[in-house]
Length: 455
Ligand SMILES: [Zn+2]
Image (cartoon, rainbow, N blue to C red; front, top):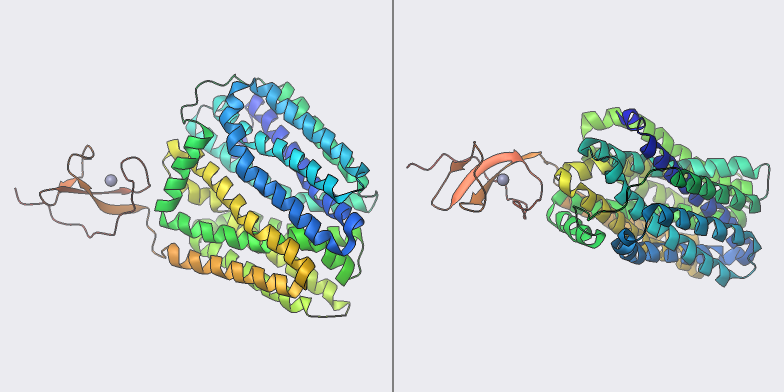
């Protein structure tokens, strides 16, 4: 299925460009953690928390603005330019000796990344006009992002056994250069008036679908659980390994790799399970796994000494990776199920923004609270956030969640479908696969099938 996509020469190049850039960003994240530790020691969590908060602020604020205006530039040169900026910034990172310089470079780097992603997403439908291929491309992009989070730390771990982390930045820069070269050799049609409106319009449509669809309200809670547990991995791994466990930079990479390994095992074994059980139980089990992982982490953080903590930490990091995969892998399917094809880009864009908002809440907690109050307090706080998220998901996403719903329409508001029956003076009733769209702006209260009105 997805493989047939890659017979498109231009799509294949652009997808490879996106994957190279993703890996560039992933390796930067690992190297950045080690750089923060070199400059700030015990305060590394605060530095990383701040740097990642800047990243999320940039994503939430800059991405929509850039996307609204990106159509006015020749898109190919815009994408190449963004890759060149990122490569230059990354090459400058090893020469940094002040913490504020990290923040400035991260702001520039992430602004370029935040501008790249929506532009890339806007190019895809022009290259793949076929609706089904486009939907598959959206799924492939999500899969690539998941694979990146798990493979980058493994690559970094392998590389760090041979070289110092400064060389990771070189690898990253090479990723961006490859990405730029691939974009240059791709035929990207110039932007024409986007049929789905601007990114901003699409965000509004996407947000409205989110607000009105019970299972998507549940997804909001699940986003929060993923961000709470993920922040521990992203922000706290360096300090926990180096200060608490007394490990080295390869110890940091080893825990990150354990996290990636957990993600990979679940992501690979999930498709069959998903077909049998559906998304809700899998995602809720994933969220429960994340809460349990955080709980074990809290218990581990109270242990003062002992070599056994290495094994326990590897297990906790792997469990959090597994839970993350169980929540994230079905997300694309849930978004597809909740929208008609024309609204899918809007809904994927809304999920992009809303998931970043969740990280915007949890990164500062993981960063600043750790420096002020230590791991135990921070992880208890994040576990409370995750607990609130899973509780919200359980309550908002009904257990019985059929695709087809029987519902009423006021007569005159829609063209009645063939099976529509008139149930009273003012209403038709019919049954179909239900999503929020222009004819269905609110989620219906379940109504039993009624007999047709006697005429
Ligand atoms: Zn209807």
